[in-house]
Image (cartoon, rainbow, N blue to C red; front, side):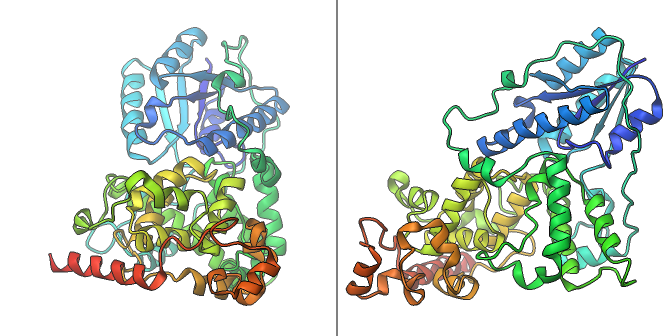
Amino acid sequence: MPSILWFRQDLRLRDNAALQAALNAGGPIIPVYILDDEGEGRWQPGAASRWWMHHSLVSLDASLRDRGSRLVLARGDSLTILRELIAAASVAAVYWNRRYEPAIIERDRRIEAELTGTGIDAKTSNSLLLFEPRTIANKQGRPFQVFTPYWRHCLAQPIPDEISITTQSLPAPAKWPKSLGLDELALLPTLDWAGGFAETWEPGEAGARKRLKQFLARKAADYERGRDRPDEDATSSLSPHLHFGEIGPRQIWAAAKALSKDSGVFPANGGVQRFLTEVGWREFAYHLLSHFPETPEKPLRDKFERFPWASDPGDVKLRAWQRGQTGYPLVDAGMRQLWKTGWMHNRVRMVVASFLVKHLRLSWTHGAAWFWETLVDADLASNTLGWQWSAGCGADAAPYFRIFAPVTQGEKFDPKGGYVRRWLPELAAMPDKFIHRPWEAPAAVLARAGVSLGENYPRPVVDHAEARAAALAAFKSLRAD
């Protein structure tokens, strides 16, 4: 009898535990993808994620067709659609890989109970993470809230091997169930604001494998230094591929180990070690989300629910931040990179997040919501960890009194202004000395560069020293409560 292979955020064929389980069971396999917005709860995929999803599904369907199969597409309530497919194709089992977002955990529990209650095998696997979040605990049996001891504990555990799936074809059913066309899922934006995405990304399993191979061959050795330089192409840019499961952490670990064979040392160098630590941060994010499921909406540190956020009538400052019009070049460059490509360098993410919550004193939830809508790698666990870290209200967080100075950050990590010039062409002719502080440039320098503050580039929306003092005062009032 046929089985259903239910794809979710595991849009790949290699190292896919659910696919391996379905193959081991034998019989025809019906690959299915269901767009279930209601089942996602409050965190339905944002516009940038939907763009990526569309193109990743194109890639997955092509890979399946190369193996004599195809992808069945549906839209609506997951349980209802699974029941319809089970009845139509006389399905005996449903296989899927687990997700760990709170709403999805609850939904999947209901689906598993309903299916098994009607005699259908419901088999779940892990292809998203190296470690199941609830299998990792500290010596007191509680969840970790600091990364370093968490990751040290993880590295003491056996790292699971990549699953080798060698079949060149997938057993197909005698009759395929009806499928929607991909366009019927309406994932692409109706306005072509995502034109820059296609210039930047190659969604799909092949694109993910290519990006990992290029990173390990060309960038990994210098990653420890280069990862903080937004003016250099020094990072892996694997985050959207990981989010959609076009590549998994087991594959990354295996590739890094293969790189280390000649040296006999794992990892082969400090750059690879630092890169694998970033994989660890992703694991830590899911560990926290699993144990503290309320954190996408609420701070982990309860006292921050009383934090005196600033008022912003008409969302004037929030809109300036969203549009890259704050008057601070590094912040604005990051926000415009985000809008153009659906992605932002991690160092700059920290700077723009700090600016929102500490210079503008606007709630981290505004930033998390904007990133969710505009990032192609929008991931609930990582997004929540990153924003609560920046706001000082989460696990292993930067203290609130640590305030990134955007000028200092720019001069340190974009010393020649290459990153700013790329994303803020109106500042391209500014000399290095003033590229990160144009408001301090003499009038003659501004004129030669063609910069007119307040006209073709904004003046700073806040004064750094005044904003810093206000942020520290707000934090001090919170501590006094």
